[in-house]
Image (cartoon, rainbow, N blue to C red; front, side, top):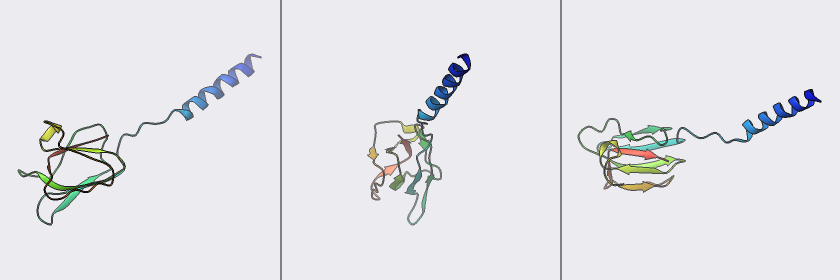
Length: 107
């Protein structure tokens, strides 16, 4: 009887572990932007829920973002995701050259 109860408890524990969804640590896909005329760059599989200051932007902000990830991207004009939310980009959204950004946060 005790062996059967122990086996049932072990099987239940395994089923519980397999049933709990694993939270994602990164958005899947690419977030592209430009840092100068004809100079595209981007982030591949960026981290989620972490503010990312865009690399390689120099003194001028990046522009023309394309959210080709599976997560929502919130872009900010200031570094460190400071200031007001500048724009929220759904997955697949592409914006023009007029939108400027220095940091991004993925959901």
